Length: 380
Image 1: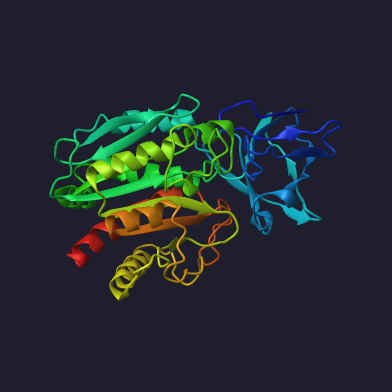
Image 2 (image 1 turned 135 degrees about the horizontal axis):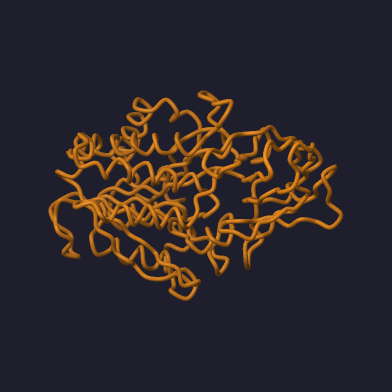
């Protein structure tokens, strides 16, 4: 029996003395950070054996409640990810498993590899209405990619069309965010699709599918190569510590922003929901009406999305200006929102086999695009 994790996004530490009767593991912290929760590893050589797998440091994870009522993701082919029950007792996350094949992969959520990211970007930029721009490089020397969907040439300057921005995976362990991006991009690539045509007639769309390539490859939960939480770097980002935010913010300044969504995953809450920027100073009834319209309309389009549960709204003047949405809404006076999806499942629309999944993330992305163009028409 062997436990391995030396692959893109891998994260686990196998403790000495582990055997099939009790495989004892720990999750490795992000580099230069105390955050940890994401795990991804391979179990080999245990076919047909009952393995007792124990993650001993679950209690110290960034969001220990995220492991409560949680079902681990597993796959034999790394394409089809199913769910398996776990138990959280005395701070140890455990599950018993009998592998049907020579090796099996386990992960906190269905991984989204950097190789798949590059495949997605390469495919997208071949479409006539999609262009690619390399914004720059990360601390580990990886590319930070921007995709632009538009019927107009990219002049590098804002035009009369609506400038709509989507970013995802500031927190690299929230892989559902890039599965969301894949769903959005696949829909937008179909130039004959009615929704795509409607969007392109009035909007330029800018998508950064992965804001944190370094953390993604390193198997981090929440930070980049320097141990920085990118979603707390939006006031004055530096190339030396958070080049990803510096480059994204600079690109947004060149176009202006009329609509902004930052796509995330929530470890603990079993819901899809949107967090707004109610904490901004000067938040008024018009701002609230715009946020309420988008959220309510998205709920009408997709049964997995709901408006009852989420993060408590902050009082005006209490916004965390270090976060992407607060900064963007304040700078551009636009509707800026954080979309959250669960690591677990949606309590109202559960899937016993897959839980919240890549496929459902992609379908929600399509609904978000529809809600966006409907919102822009409503606002006009």
